[in-house]
Length: 335
Image (cartoon, rainbow, N blue to C red):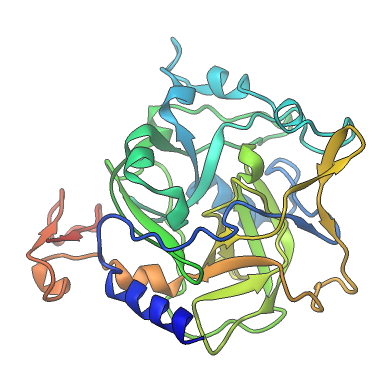
């Protein structure tokens, strides 16, 4: 409609605001399972590429009050591992998966530069920038499926952010308080062209706040080639997956999970995961599923500047905390 077109055009005018412009939240916190529940822990996954991405590049957005202070060994694990459990907090039925997993995360994020993460726009605000950290190693790994140590080198603060959120586009890029140690940014697709229908989509994030789950069973249902704002896919995702990086089969980030359907449904006196039936393995007949912002939108909107000439006429400085020729940090265009 002309109204939606007008809203979209106006939203792009304010793309480069450091803070937010809010139009409508839509269904940003609602997600679901399509067909078979494909979610697995890192320790159970057979996809080596996605296991490596999870270990090296995926961060949970966690309240600093939940993290607390490190123990005598410098680890944050005990507070996180003993945090509220999914089953009790959601009143899940006794046979539901992951009932005993902690729900410490509020959103998901992916490392896209030494000091930048990409997440959903609705995950970021001035409050969350000040009150939440980006935490790596929040997953079960190894032969005994345990947490790796979560140390000070795995916990980062928000230095500044840029976001947009409306019914079509929903993303945030966050510059962290320092470059991340011992991790690796993922490659990001910046080509402003549509994905193909039925392209496989691999996703990792913290659905319902629990430790990272890998889902390799999703497919593009509708690439929306005439819009290039978001695409629709059949990923098994939940609230807490917001901001999750979606990858193609080559391990390149192609989208950010932002919206979906209802997570849990009542079943007697408890709740179960909402499972949407599919007529084929791709769920290709669905018209309403999970929505993911195309990755080229935030990447083109928030350039890594080396000097102010990279920023455009609306900016008067390029903020860096390392040498302009260094790749150890990124620059941030500022007014």
